[in-house]
Length: 316
Length: 260
Image 1 (cartoon, rainbow over the protein chains, first blue to last red):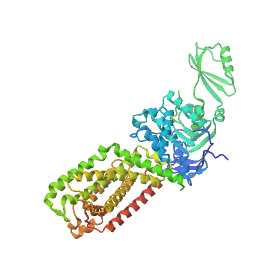
Image 2: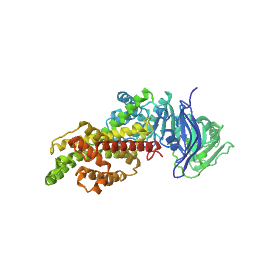
Image 3: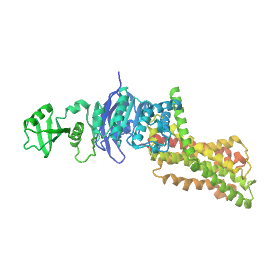
Image 4: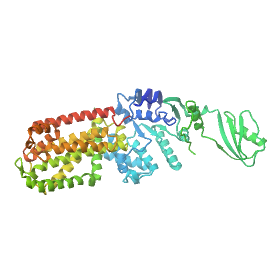
């Protein structure tokens, strides 16, 4: 029988100051999946990852990684996990190559083999030429890639990435996506937390949303997106429209003389929208989605428990 | 623990020690050179200028008498400061997490940091011994006692430095103990004088100072003279090693200072 990559049962964490970060969450990540763990700031994502990776002590609950119990077999749990944390946590005064090779050494990999692997992963991530340079001299994007190489050097079966592309430019982000998709295709399970919802939608097949220390959604990306009953598009017009047509499943509203927004209900086709606009002699110059679909859902689900600014950004 | 894990753990331990050694070796101008300069000044001022007026101590030239104590002073302070600064900066920069997420047992994390501290303590000890040769002829009464005492003392203070590093929350916290505890205890530990010179009451007080036993045992190894029984020195040093190691292990197992 195939073990789940990660199984969490009734996991609770209350910090010393009394803050209850996790209120008894259950979560299962199937082996081989690319899993998104989303949530607003302070929702409990990093605490969950901290507990799974042994950086945070849990208050109660069970964690199993590929069937190994965190309480009984912590060394085996650790051997199976590679972590790319949110913040840079390597020795800035160490050469890039040594950061990776030392990490391999902590997993019992002899130095010669460790250098072979470092060459492979640093090479894949475009950092092999920088191996002799001090880690502090790397750019932000390079530092993120260094942490990915370091997390992979012991070839874990489960890779956990906490905001891996934060502050990374779009070109580099896309190349990192490609790299992660490739290693997932090779059979490695991946858990990703991100603020870039486009990233989660593009990469992940399964998703859990955590809010206020509780899992509020845990499903496949496809079925989650199917819950979205309307999608909003922005239409740039060639000329001002004198009057907006009406339709039961498409609502149009004017933003300014040359811009309209259309809320299209699920099941309605874009052809209907264009037929409607044609009939009203409205010419469209261009069209775009108003928001990322996942972002729309995310806000809806987390807004129900708390309103206000969450600091969620969508990739442009 | 099976053989595979033993081999993995041995590799992990070597990695930590090598990393620690490279750390202080890269910055040798800050770590190895200053104690050599400081001790050279001690030899010139206390041993040469003042010592010439003091005459003999326990039947030895004053310069010859203070050499073991000054070597020990350098070993103690460097073993301690290497581990406390390395462990605290690993916490401060958060790269201690590299070790915490890995399968390295806490006992090996302790041994690795202690290994680095002992390596620096002994490196500086050898360097200061070489400096001392300009002022005093080399004397070795018992190589076994000399080596065992210097290594064990270095272990004691490397462990103490680790515990300080675990509790430290700021850079101030890593300098308080060396400044206000370690240096006074070392100076009062018979580095510059024989405790037999003190009145009975202060001799009794001095015997509460563990560093006195270490300095005296080391002096015995080099010169063949001591104010205290050698077996008692060994017993005290071993008791400190066991006690401090167990305390450090409990702290790391509980995640004190490193896990929330």
